[in-house]
Image (tube, rainbow, N blue to C red; front, side, top):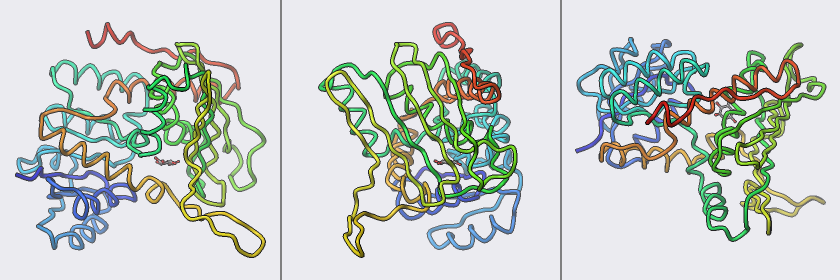
Length: 338
Ligand code: ISE
């Protein structure tokens, strides 16, 4: 029978997941939503109720504990995740948690340890680039060994615009965190040192916000990655990655959908945001999560991946204020997970 899903947080991402479950995902149905903005939650529940009743539950912890909710999607802001994740673990509920896992390395490690104590993986982190068909093909190519050993990654991560409240630290924790995961995953190594540089900021941001940022990751296995994160690029949403290996390189994210030639220019369209660019990735991520939960497993980035990313971002935020390299303080995986 269908997996009954409750969603905590129905802002842009949570509402997108709600629509996805109702319209595209098989083997699952949406039964409850929770949001501090109850009017927004009510509106969404009413709109999506045609396929079956969607309850609005004011208290997110009550939604997590509800008997008719089998699994949870957390799309609340990062600062709310820790308590909500602990509640999921306490109730034995599988959870797909949007990034970041939590706001700092210490609380993320507590989450990893609490889950480990249960002896069962319940947490998957929303690092959805791993499910994007282009990234997945790049991973397969690198793992095949065809290009030889990967040496470097060059990443570009641009948003059209963000509000003035999107501060420098958020650019690291909410945006760069994706490339932190991409680098760990594609290069198959932890990040040992991070350096975050920033040029004179764009005039599109308020005083004190460092945008764009340029970071260098030194991987434990000797490879490296760089990333430009620019969250007020003005033009559109663009995420690219080039892997350089011993016998060649491969690039994804060029967006070579429909190329037009007109009025003295050639080119294609740029998506306005991540919901459009990563539409397929989100569908695949959630479908695979639903199927894995049915088998009592997770099938994607784990709580450890969320913790490792939080540890790197914490070091990244420290580096941002000095421009100096900061060593990542990562617990010993073997010691934590046995
Ligand atoms: C957002 O939360 C995301 O996850 C997007 O992928 C990223 O591009 C954006 O900067 C974040 O705010």
